[in-house]
Length: 354
Ligand code: AMP
Image 1 (cartoon, rainbow, N blue to C red):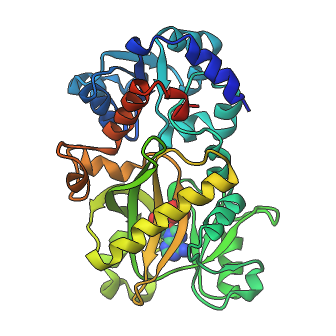
Image 2: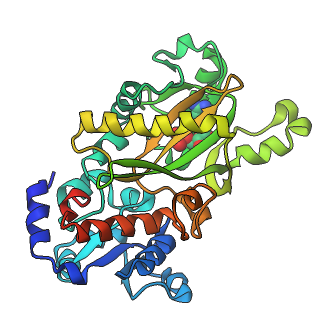
């Protein structure tokens, strides 16, 4: 893990008046670029060959760099180029997936917005569960042994990307049969999690260490294939439906019953307080808690995304919630640049970048 002192040393050599906000061209790059520009920063997008046109077309980037593969960003020369431009990288979901948490922690010496220690807690299912439990969140039941399955479970394989390859099983036999069909080795690890029935909410928060405030900026529901397609045909498909999959294909806007908002805020607050206890100074910046709200109005949480999530793309111009907090369009992407700007004004960049 690259030490914080090393990154701080690098930032000592940065010219605060010539900071460049940089990110990879995918996921939430458009709103990150727009947000940086709206806050008066120079910005840069690093695109995989063939995707530059999208970013050029919107005209939001001062600089468009092209790479053959994303991991080129980790190469020394590339990093030096970024450092010369006083770059602060903004991590997003694809950024973490393409560069890998371990390689980011150990090889990326370019300052990144937020606390990179969080990557370790987010990417390890066991650690993530500990974090959520300690934050007092209600979690789905987990079964250690497939023989104990006594209700509908969702089987999560670590290699399953974005919900593709998850399976559902209602009893031990069904599990065995589907496991066999997948031709997995017995050593393949998996998590057996109670499938929680209810309505999903993915609240988007932002924690500012400068104001010590957790802000609820927006919320979405992930639109997932083929499960959301099966739901439309459930009456016709009955018992002959295909195995559901949970591949995110888009995002739907949502607001929540107002009486549930205090609990939503409380969950965000608890996740931040616990993160401080687990990996000081804890989570910084945007994050999301993936939840299902049951008919008893209880929130069951099954994941924390410790960085900007793609559902925030709905709100490049602000959301019903961000409009209550800010008198101007405030996306999560822009909020990141606002935090960097405030930190620069307070001479506290090291409080928000590692
Ligand atoms: P994940 O990879 O954990 O983000 O899960 C992908 C998708 O699977 C979620 O967006 C939900 O639609 C669904 N899902 C995951 N875990 C559960 C659960 N315990 N109960 C119900 N749905 C779930």
